[in-house]
Length: 455
Image 1 (spheres, helix red, strand yellow):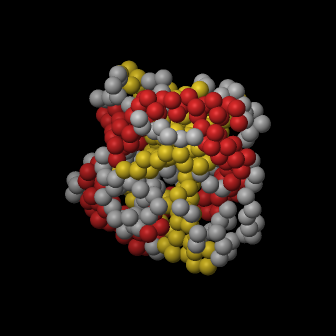
Image 2: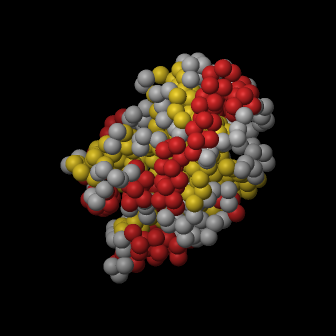
Image 3: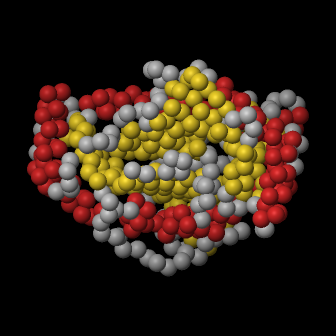
């Protein structure tokens, strides 16, 4: 596709229809052209819908609007179901240009947990192919048109409709610029949450667990809806080394600025990192350095971190070759917290996919615990709320097997009537309930500031 105009779109859809007629089933048409004048963040800020993504190392920003194909799957094998349907769609796709079709979405933390009403629009696994997709990386900015073409489709009708959708993409949507006020804040009192930590410590002392991650849930009722576009702009301005994401479903928006990458794949090379062990940022450079040095030397934090490293290595072992983990952790510094981080790289074996790796790793001990089954059982029985997509994989994958999945942390679920915030921390032997509560406060602070709400 050479440009966004009627002749280019018509030619794309005519070729796709011929393939659909030959196969007697729908075919995904994908056309790509350069788009140097488009900015994914500006478009998301103006449209406040669809999918937004901005990851670092390597840098990639995406904005997708409109849904041309979707796959939703339930149960613990939902990723395998998604992979099967996506592979079949890509096998038939008609691609005009240098970029493959791209799928965006995520999954729930735990499909066995009953779904809370505010998470109802988000299935166990839900992925969309955007109609129009803007992508920006080190090689420039590109625009993809992705459209499902039936054997009996009229290419001219499709071309006119796609062109109209693109023109609407460039027109900002009206919105209320007022700042929402907090009507009510609901959260478990600190003492009751710390009682849960004590319960976890007793389970660890009884050798039922070596680690479990306990999270907190805060619900804000607001007098007007939040503006996800303005919120993403604020998160972008204070992101540091964090990755950004936003996914919209039926009037709800799940978005965040997470420090953690679960797994990425580029030309068969996998990349991830273990992220566990935290301390706040210092108020001065010298204090910040002192806190970071102490974190690197803290035996409890190093033990918690090594549990995550070992779990990732073991989880990937059957899927990869040339698996390498850095011998020592380094510091990953974010706006108000710093973490221990260990890079891990590997080569994906033939016949294995990125989603195989995602399924093998989730949930890592950084968001679940060890042993995994025992930790999940403890969370179900004691945490007291539905995590939904919090601390679960969100990301993208393309028709060539490339992709990137983040762990959805430092995040919020926006609803028409308010928002839900989440934060957790790892409980291991030696954890102190008051300190763990303070750690969750630090993790919540950046999102609360961006939202304009506070404790």
